[in-house]
Image 1 (cartoon, rainbow, N blue to C red):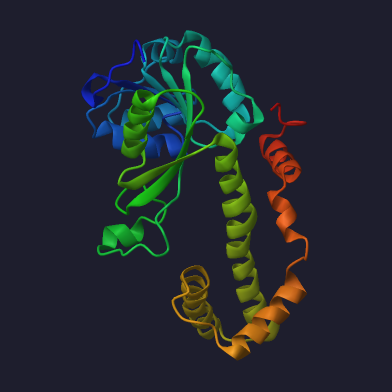
Image 2: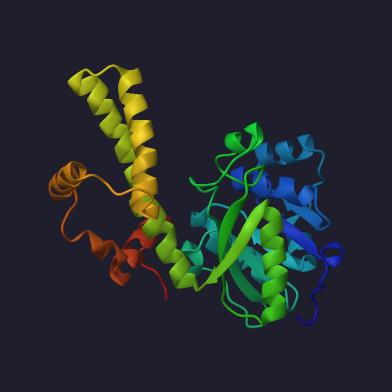
Length: 290
């Protein structure tokens, strides 16, 4: 990395979209770090939030040409157009970092051979995390008090580049337990397929099942909620960790549930064609460019 410094105090980080939901989260962590942080925001409401936080605004051209690491904390659907404005102005050896793999996987980011491309997505605090303080319990998303892990991808770059990227990633999502490195495609399989297509869908489905138990069957809400919340924990720890075996009767009910609810061909969501299709839909484009 010919023109990028290697210590936090000498590295300039630019947060593009610093007044948005994720931009504010990562900016809060950079504001208390040793990094020299530049905050860029286009919307008047976002600019006001940055000023209220006591931070100065920097125009996008200055930030792009100055920063060693440029973080695009903007919605996925505009990542391509924002990168076209930012990438040509970045200095040689700099890192452009996105927070979601969809645009990188779809080939929407403006390209240059002399800069480095990274993606880092937070895992959020684990359901199995041993929380010990009220602040950790309140931080369900991560990035404030509850430790979390991060999965990241680096398209090009040596060990030095990876180390710099990992340090920045660990700061913006702090407190971080570990950063796991994968390929861009593998990260795209994790998010959206594993955690949105499947896990988030299951979470929402559980809420629908709770509503049907209460509104459709007539079970008192408090009783249904207590039963579901407790058994969800048991289902997760038994299913994912094998903490305790499910009973024989439970296996019979589980089999009935799988036959009644889950399609036999459900694993097709892991096919490349399905991944391409869902990412194209998420980015509101005709097709990925990879």
